[in-house]
Each structure stands twice: as C-alpha cells, then as structure tokens.
Image (cartoon, rainbow, N blue to C red; front, side, top):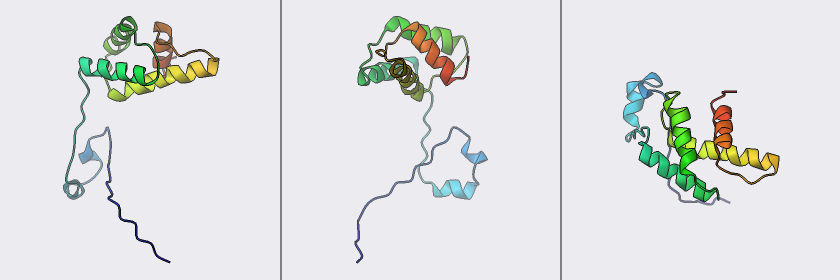
Length: 121
C-alpha cells in the first residue's frame, strides 16, 4: 500500500568558511537565498546570554558577565558568537550535574567552561 504524505522541505547549509572556497559559482547560483549571520554586538550578546540563563534557571550575574567579556573576549581578542552563550552555560550545567551541585554563574564556573570550550587548560 502506498501512502502520500505532503510536506514542505527546506534544505539549509551552514558554514563558517567562505562559500566560494567550498563550491563553484554554479552551485552557489542554485542556492537562491544566502544569509550572512555576523558576530553580535555586545548588547545583543548580553541579551542572548541573559535569555539562556533564564531558560536554564541560572541567575544572571552582571559582574560575572563583565568578567567574561573583559577577561576572555577582550584580553584574548575573541569575537563574540551567539552560540557561545548556550555552549558556555551548558558546560556549567553539565559540570554541576557531574559534581552533584546546583549550576551557578560564577567567575570560577565561567572560567572553567571557557577553558574546556576553547581548550585552554
């Protein structure tokens, strides 16, 4: 027995590499819509970070956030990426669960998360 199931399909390619270095011009022409998602401004990054904290039940701490920005992003000249908020906080959560403690945003936990994420031991 055959059953038809109507649905829409959307194929999305994502890369942090220059598309022209990956495929030829003809392939790029066939992808009609291309969206560049750039690095967020600090205010947007802060809002994303706060929202991820709220979504995970972690109290946002402005002092720790400022420490993260100055100590790591500015001193190490790392560009802000929206995914860092989720990834750093998930690292804090995973480590807390492993240790059997409540996840908290502190200078120590954010430093440990950064070191693990960016492989700085």
